[in-house]
Amino acid sequence: MKFYSTNNKNEIVNFEKALLKGLASDFGLYMVNRKDIPKITQEKIEAMNKMNYSQIAFEVLYPFLKEEISDIDLKNILDDAYNDEEIPTIIESLTKNVYIMWLSHGPTYAFKDYAARFLGRILNYFLNKRKIKKTIVVATSGDTGGAVANALLNLPNISCVIFFPKESISEEQRRQMTTLKNNIYAFSVNGDFDVCQDLAKTILNDKDFAKKVFDDPDHISSANSISLGRLLPQMIYPFFAYSRIANKNEEIIASIPSGNFGDMMGTVLAKEMGLKIKKIICGVNENKEFPEFLKNNKYEVKASIYSPSSAMIVSHASNLARLVDFYQGHIYDERDSNNQIINPGIIDKMPNMKAMKDDIFSVSINNKKHFETIERIYKKYNIIIEPHGAVGIASLEKYLFQKDQNLDNTDSKAVIYETADPAKFKNDVKKAIGFFPEIPEGIKKQENLEERIYEIKNISEKSKNGLKLTQNQIEEAKEKIKKIFSV
Image 1 (cartoon, rainbow, N blue to C red):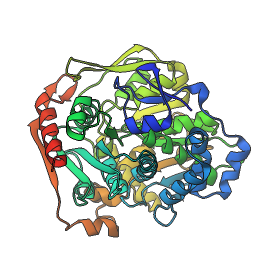
Image 2: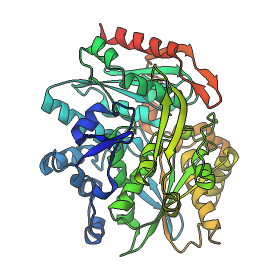
Image 3: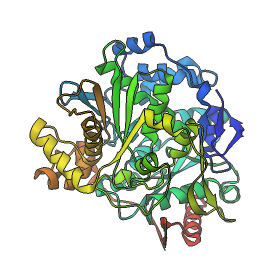
């Protein structure tokens, strides 16, 4: 299986190289040609109802990886990553045909655990094979940081640097990164997630810096959803949901709260593999660049807007590059001579918009609607959801309303991805329903642990597209990383 850069289809690599590099040398994301995406037969899909999560994961991932890893090794990795006792996947009935898939019962109580656990183990597998070490650089809008940190903690061949926006993540999310220490280094950044993401990409592509600090220009890699190792395991969610809720040959709707578009892109790939998905609903918060793009055929990046669904405060989703590529288009970020983004989200080849709209419905959920939905779902169904799940439910409702249907009378099976435990957003949940949700033991344990935080003190610039990464921030980050790894 070959993968190419979304910015240069002549830059072709296998999975191992894409995983170790993280980001293509031209800032493109590694992607598979649509015609090369393997198909899974309906017979095999129907047989998944007797499989556990790790077995389904094997059926989905092995066709992509079989030339680079043995079936035995992959099964061992997946059995370890998706042990049902450590990371149970729960499907809960909301109404007769609508279900919530709780992807929030792993070690950090967020769906990011699924991709991070696979990535950590598969990365360590290839590093062991090559007898080399890597430093993983990650940007997080909230849940990615904790999940990746937990998955990579104490792995012998890996160190991890995480950039998080200082003011827009919860204390619970922050502590899942900052209390681990050892090989995990958490950096607070004066900026939003897009600034953190640009900083991670800049350091990833600075070969001279990697050579100077680690004596290896290819030493630094990524564990963000820009990493192929994070994207592929996100194809598994809809297959698992389908195996638990669908009847033979039935189509389902997948409603996905979306920030950097990894889970949504994984679902698009699952549909291409043969999974019967009637519609993919891409729910966003008030950062509504994508639904406006589908509506107006014009993509414009604006300043990011605060939302209770904090992991989705993303104005320019990285995986949009893969989505546009999938539908035969091309989008890129214009950069200056220092590789700083000066004009994000330039589409020089429009994708097939009709095909994209046929497959995907996207809608923006405003901040007020987050709280209204949490309150209403609790009062009507006695189920506590959190802000991201609220976006998934409200987006599904808006789609059904167009068809004169609602949660109680839809004639199509639908699954909503619930991406975090309500306790990670306890203040927002209390605001909506009047009391705090139950706090899981793992979060309680971290409440009083000492934190270790490295701070990027320089401040982002303001621009017409929102906050912008500065050269001072880059230099400060490099200096502090150099100091950490020079000891």
